[in-house]
Amino acid sequence: MDRVSVAIWSFYREDPELARRLDPLLAARLSRGWGCVRIACRDAAHRAVVSGLLPLLRPPLAALGLAREIRLLAPGCEPLVFPVVLPFGGGLLAYDGSIGE
Figure 1 (cartoon, rainbow, N blue to C red):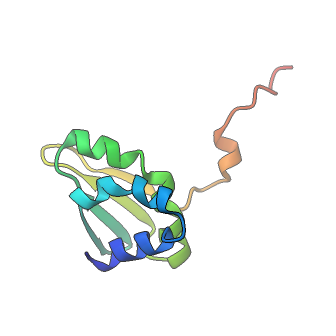
Figure 2: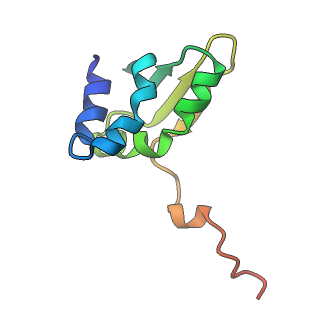
């Protein structure tokens, strides 16, 4: 297991349920360089599963300052690039229905 993987699993060592949700990462290859963490997935379906783990990947990467972005790679597909730290608060991502009342 590489250093990035160890850092992510160590972050969740106190909560085995969250750590278990990271199991799809065991089938991927993680590497770090130039301000990004690259996650090489087996195929597009695996990449879709791993992209669902972004809310679990962002906190340890941001807390440890390991990367500024996450790149999800799959053979024959364009890379998906996500920021580690969202440019504005997460509360702005959810519409609460208050506009227009």
